[in-house]
Length: 248
Image (cartoon, rainbow, N blue to C red):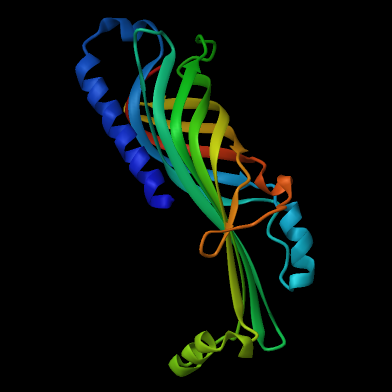
């Protein structure tokens, strides 16, 4: 999923710069907010994982952080010109959080990984803050959430590993991986602050609404009765740096 996201972002940024080269001579761009560029986006992700944490109490690990975790990725955009204030682009990022505990000779670990990417459509509000662009919009795309749970010894020999694979009933070690792919509809609010017109700093928020609750286990086995709350969306608080040309 991560590779797909970064391919989407790279293709989006390339298409944006091509569009800019074709249309950069149009003077009408400067009658409204104008910019083209791409760069790095960092995010503090606030997930909805209470149904998972309820189960971890008996599994033996600390709860996964409800206070959030770090995600990162990339984004790009271009103002299309013939609709003043409207810009299109692409974005994608991913992150993870995990907890582990050593107890009774076994380490127990829980890990959450999430990623999403898509096409962004935004409208920059008429100028009421000088030299900054405030934009509202939406991201349409896809995402993935993966939950992993493990119980294992701290070290293995080659022979021990294969003995367990041959006779899985003789071991107390196990691993489980659940994954959910879904569509994403994500309202956004961003403020872009340019510096010397060639660099812009972004601060914003995105709420990714997940459409789909189709969980798979390990080798694509269906998992039923997963709490709906586990598939709900999550909030991203974003900051980034973009390179290109910007005029707000």
